[in-house]
Length: 281
Ligand code: PMP
Image (cartoon, rainbow, N blue to C red; front, side, top):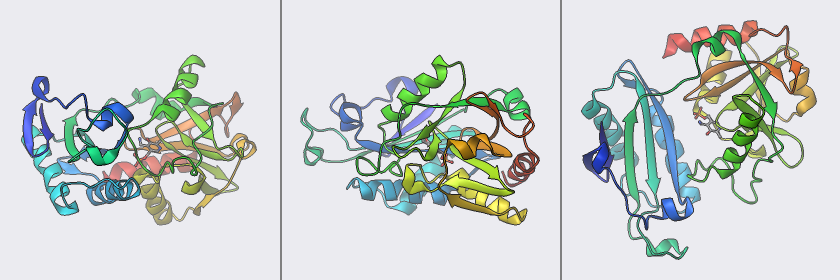
């Protein structure tokens, strides 16, 4: 494994950053999780665009332009000779002092790790998963707009701990008004009255690349799809439900807080979308 740090490649053992990096000290940085399918980077441009939007919101200067970043990603895949896998792209504020002041960090650091991906076991894609709603509330945009894909995932982590303690793989987070937002590492869709709905990003959800891919595929399949505002009541009464993410791809949900979704099996439209997704990757 060859890891890219600021323009140079290092073996895993030697890939190190400073303990004074504000990415470590304060979670001051951003990242992207990206897939490689059959030697090609999936939605490369979309991921790079989202990274630069996160950077803009954080006033974080990236020492490469978007084109150079794409080239660095393509080169990392080539150097690692990966046909299928996962890329973790990280930009940290860089090395600074122990104080919070970001201006003490001279230069942000770019890290690219090309590795394998641990998906959920195959049976979950076939049979669906059970999830719960978390009591941990999604951070409101007045605190941090979660469209910034930042290195600070403590809000998600606290909810993930709830999921683990309840013996399920994922959980759904609500915002402070009780509206559904997303899961700890995935977006959520429901099929309600034959319409696919996913929460509006501004309620507290990442603008997922896989979510946007679902919009494209649903349009091709002539399934009505839109962003919406909805609550737990809508989740419980949905005909179908699934989660989307770069790592998880599309995973059917068959039970939420003990309520069976649809007939308790992955829904028809969910299965159609999974098939279509397989075609494009
Ligand atoms: N929400 C959160 C909180 C995430 O971390 C992710 C990515 N793992 C997603 C949604 C899905 O986004 P994407 O489809 O771009 O991977």
